[in-house]
Image (cartoon, rainbow, N blue to C red; front, side, top):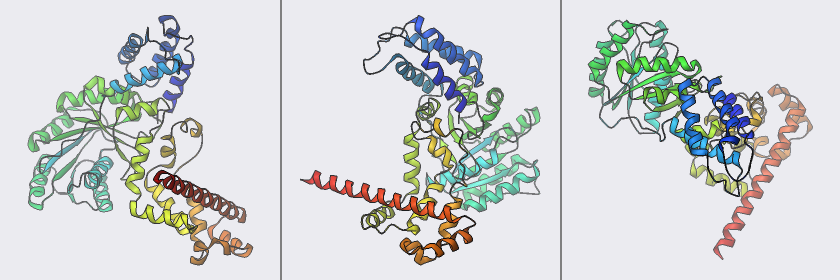
Amino acid sequence: MFESLSERLEKSFKLLKGQGRISEINIAETLKEVRRALLDADVNFKIAKQFTDMVKIKAIGQEVIKSVNPSQMMIKIVHDELVELMGGDKTDINIKVNPSVILIAGLQGSGKTTFSGKLARWVQSKKGKNPMLVAGDIYRPAAIEQLKVLGTQIGIPVYTEEDNKNPVQIARNAVREAKISGRDVVIIDTAGRLAIDEEMMNEIASIKDAVNPHEILFVVDSMTGQDAVNTAKEFNNRLDFDGVVLTKLDGDTRGGAALSIRSVVNKPIKFVSTGEKMDAIDVFYPSRMADRILGMGDIVSLVEKAQEQFDTEEARKLQKKIAKDQFDFNDFISQIQQIKKMGNVKDLMSMIPGVGKSIKNLDIDDNAFKGIEAIIRSMTPQERTNPAVLNGSRRKRIASGSGTTVQDVNRLLKQFDETRRMMKLMTTNKNAARMMGKR
């Protein structure tokens, strides 16, 4: 995410020379490179210039604190301006009314249908709501079926009228059905086109008039860069939407949409979406995104994802097993499953400060754990519980059963022993510190 922009900004900060004070002389080359980095990321030219002008105003004359150097001071100023550029604070969606109607708009291929499913799951799991999805795209043959499949996958009903070719009527009937069936959030997936046209705009405007939505979200493919911003402007002129959703942020995006769209349409980015998994959706926090753009990671989001997946009671039981040196391969594979639920492994690692740059060229995906899982699943229950019994013949059988080599099995056993030793040491030290604190 934003790898190219992050690299360019990092190089620009290294150009800043001098000690004690940031001046117009020692800041000139840095600001020139910052502006180039933003333009290369497909940020609107006027916005890039306004951004660097504001950074210059705030930076010149700044006293450099003894414990930091001028480039670190500049990073702080740029960070704060990035946060402001992207909206300052996070903005919530309006789902207070019962039922709350959310209208999803955007061009075809932007990821509206997939996002609709993700949003339904999000309001259910995070907000305790009882949502219903509405298949309002009557033109794309696979749209209704795709939404039905997603609904089945996440256990949320999908309202359809497959013989009805009037999307306005479908939306109106869906809201009526939601009231009858006790659904408190109605998410309407609408049709898109390959380009903006009058027919599409008139149709979605008519749907808006018919159901009077409490929230209109414009979904935009972040990989389209400045085109995405122009499209958002056209939609906003007709719909006056409430917020923006950036999809495909895990792709080769340059970041221009995320950095420009707030300034152009004066509407907040509310969600970001990555990948196809139904839990790959995040609330947009400008400060956290600025952290990631500047290579600072996003440890807060990482911790939140971990807290969502790891059960407190299970963690307590696991800690007891570690303390008694009873951590086994059943626990090991359970932890792997928990990590996988948190999302894309490479994306998770990039949230750790300082790690993003070091893994940018590594091929890390959701298949990273497949070999390990195959080996563990080829073990007998006794072998998983008591790895000490794994002699040469057993290791050979496991390698054959998992499609790996004996060397792979040996490597995993060594890593497992090291992990278990480290976890035991950490638990022992933690308990010792707790006891010292009680004295």
